[in-house]
Image (tube, rainbow, N blue to C red):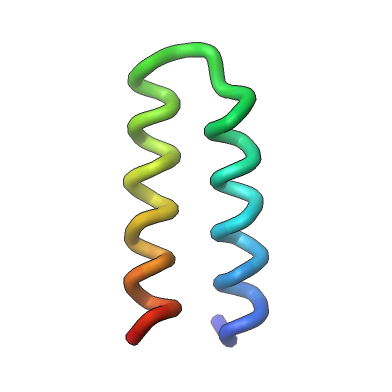
Length: 42
């Protein structure tokens, strides 16, 4: 994955988390987004 794809996936995950209904669903999406963010910053 290149930087652009990772950034796009990150923004999609945050958007999904914003509209998610369950607590576990939100936490799971935010954890995935955090992993991608660490890849972006490194």
